[in-house]
Length: 461
Image (cartoon, rainbow, N blue to C red; front, top):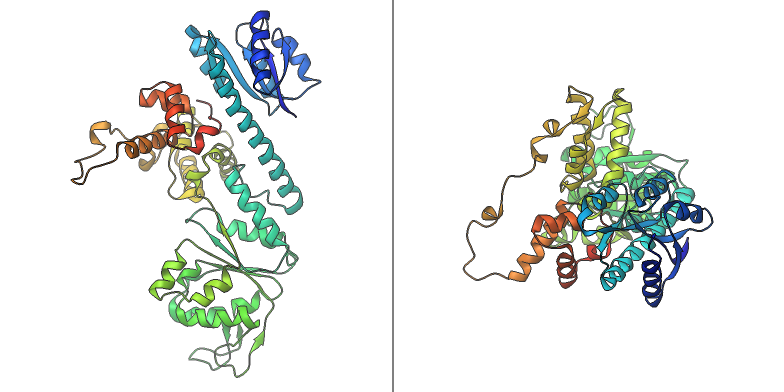
């Protein structure tokens, strides 16, 4: 796409010229088209980053938007509509438009919207380029998402995959830590070797050492033969230690030796065994706090955290939720041979707006549960689990009483704005309507409180 290039589409020639002048003064390159049909012909020869189109023309803006969507073009679209036809603008946003402005045009507001749309478009192109590079070069296609936070972690993972450095993956339960660990292994020089995954919290404390390090015949009652431990089984490949924070202190000492010396001692053995393993550990726990509590060894922590990777929770990459819904629901339908089942738009919107404390794993479980339990081919709000049902609370229930020490009104305003944006997946129009303020007022207050989401795209209503 041509950087900073805008195509303005309007059948009012004088308005086209004024918009061109205003946008060129703001630093953009501008091309003009008199209606949707002419604009579509121009799009075959140019790829503008942004299109500003009127809705009421001989070939309408909605028709142009429909063509752009069907062609899979990534161009960002802003629609222009008369004040009395907001419903049409909302329909345009459902079809993929980024935002709308109303006539008569406030050119200062228009330039502000264009600036944000361009920043959004630049981010989309940057993310698309990075995602393509990661998928083609490192095979991370199994990890769904296009958000900048996720791709930043995947970029780091792709870089470290080519080296044998120990990796510590941090993140809440359900964020996909094992998936990233497997991707690192598959992208490494050890990909032909074994990938051995161990959940340290799932092994009984009295069996940890024998499971991890192995044992010799006669080492304890019932040890009737020599047995290799899980670490030795990973020789030549990758050892993934999930929930490393659950590992007992005695086993931590022996694991430290594996990392330092590349050798282990089986229970009952008089000599050590050399092993060649690449260790990737993961945890949802705060290991630095555990070090202070004396439940995790500081020297082991620094051996593990050579390259720390922190996976963002799903609530911090909400733009990935629609794609995750589509991918995970399709996988579940194929797994259960229920290909005709669909999600209603209301359910889809509720899934997008939910906080997902259990992250991707919870989303996957909810989708599968609704799929197998729904009696019909269309999943409706009646099929939602109880925890996903919308709350009926209102403003009178926000605070049961006020604290004696006083409160910050600005902090409360910031919290309410953040909650409203989260509720509507970043959609400023819907958030403003929910808060009973104008969208321009919402944008002003977002900027006032330093919301990064003031500079990102809305999702469609």
